[in-house]
Amino acid sequence: MALRKSQAVNIKNKKARFDYEIVDTYTAGIVLTGTEIKSIRESKASLADTWCTFINGELWVRGMHVAQYFYGSYNNHEAKRDRKLLLTKKELRKLAADSKNPGFTIVPIRLFIGDKGLAKLVIALAKGKHEFDKRQSIKDNEDKREMARAFMK
Image (cartoon, rainbow, N blue to C red):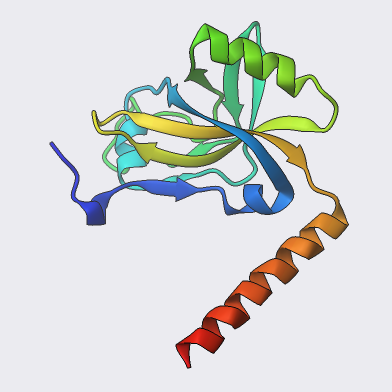
């Protein structure tokens, strides 16, 4: 069953690009249970306040909220639970080594449904921004907006 463009799932973590400088991105699969994929297909998920961590050499996403499925019964899932991410061993080793450097972390950026109907999570190796970097980002965005308005007139 193919989704139409209007039904495409594209859940973003808008705060991640503001708080962090993105160094490298990866696309990972997610291990889901039962009704979680149905809720994600209805765009009932949130990436606000999520982060990734290594537990026993595996990458896990923590703090991701997937609302309980409305039509789910006693089989419904827990809304905020840790979910395992699926990456190749090479990618996991590289991420583990890079994330140990001071100031670097792994943050989810985008959740979407792939071509085969599977949920995918775009994660990024990111470096935290300082307050003056955030102010510069705001100024750059305002300048872009003003230039766009000038061209529209």
